[in-house]
Image (cartoon, rainbow, N blue to C red; front, side, top):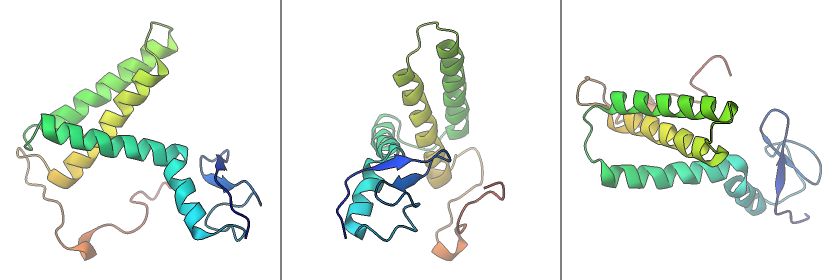
Length: 139
């Protein structure tokens, strides 16, 4: 099996094998270790690592679960404003928009896993209670 160290993104934003052109889960020309490396260094993998780093920083800076929904909505507003300012050429960079989007994702993870003390939602403690596969029927 040839060793491959990169993938490219298909028009559907999914990683594709550079050797055979197949989706990674259908590719048979690479070894699983290379595939795992590619997933970590793909665009999605890099953003997920940024989200994990942001989670650590956010939990350190803002411990507790009070007003998590309000914080998430605030972050969504900031990414929305950043996108509009970037689109209009008002000085907001692509990196700033990405940073705001990562903060939205981190807050969404915190809300999903920690809840909000203002609401009765609790993260399921039993793995069997977690949703399986994509959580929206629109995928």
